[in-house]
Length: 373
Ligand SMILES: Nc1nc2c(ncn2[C@@H]2O[C@H](COP(=O)(O)OP(=O)(O)OP(=O)(O)O)[C@@H](O)[C@H]2O)c(=O)[nH]1
Ligand SMILES: [Mg+2]
Image (cartoon, rainbow, N blue to C red; front, side, top):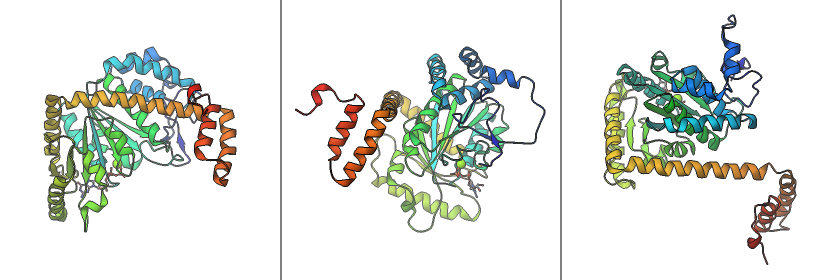
């Protein structure tokens, strides 16, 4: 991110670096009338709730910014906002789209999202940006600029900066989905790069998971971790255009065949492997047909409700674990003792289990009856 990046309008007055989202400065303009008032409103939960429920994009953007804030001072307002909006959420189809860097995820979402908007649907796009903690993610960065979709009145596009913390991204993305649903979005598309852990976490937040692939040389399956293929409900080989069509079809067939050897969680759903071109839009409609087919299958079999149920519980556990970790690491006595004990463990003077127990005790986390006799 360049040095000219600044917090966007909807960051409250005096908001510091705890607001991770930044925008690249544009051509200087006279201050927009009402900009100061917009900043003052940023922490006003009742007005955010009213705005979000009315489907106002500005309010939704400010609500997400509040949720993304790392400041303890904003936590209470963020929690109230979520609690009030929870009963109005849950009605969207949550679709995750993953794939290797450059597979064409953003282009695919641009094409698909535009088609859905043209058909009168309201589409929100959240992209989990695994960029470095230094850049804090890049809003309006080249990669997330979905030009056609951003011109659609029924679309809302929001990159979620990761701040380098995968667990944090996942939590905020889950909360952001809730806000988008309360704002009346019917389809939430979540883009995540298939580079490691993030897609597993995103899988835990969506109803349908789509893996976008590209044709490659040699053994196609080498490039993608087996685990990710097993998580996918639908697979599509992208960039099926021009001279690439033959290679795409070969890759598609290869995956179709290989899929028989993967363990698939749901025996009644065999993940289809399709080919599409996000540039020409050929085949993108068929991918959506399969999403619809999957969603009715999941609803009929009860899998939809089951996934949502277990996802709510794992959301709670993830937050609990994170809270425990934060509470533990923020205790001053723990920090000092940890440094000392780490040295002792490395030197081989004390064992790791002993050091761990001492630290948990110092944090008040060891129950009396668990102490060694
Ligand atoms: N020929 C062809 N090129 C495509 C297609 N889809 C995407 N591309 C190109 O592939 C490049 C990467 O596309 P993106 O949509 O940014 O890919 P991405 O998967 O979102 O990339 P990251 O977010 O960086 O992981 C761009 O130059 C696109 O124009 C397609 O269907 N056909
Ligand atoms: Mg992208």
